[in-house]
Length: 145
Image 1 (cartoon, helix red, strand yellow):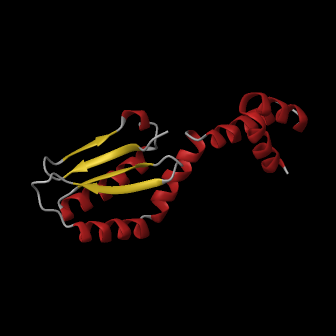
Image 2: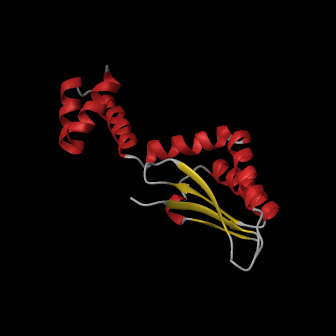
């Protein structure tokens, strides 16, 4: 899996792009994230993008046309400030990703579903192992202990 950009904001044409594959992110998170990223983009005159890296961690990066001056130091400082001031927002986005897009989140959802169906611990672990392999079973066992 490579980096996945979910949001890019351009101060040059005053537009933003939100990746349609991530439309299931809660609207409150989308709106607050878009506003925060747009403010930084305008302030530092750079395209600011947010996404998930290969490990599923959030990244925020800045890019610009070669012809346009950007405040790279200011951008780095603004991104750092955003990470501190909007830590709860970023934590919510990370949690959403872990639950809905990572394999381990899928395992957690599957465990809850199987428990509501009355499956025993052994049955549950057997189903998880068939679907996700030994690593999935070990993860599920750790959750159930």
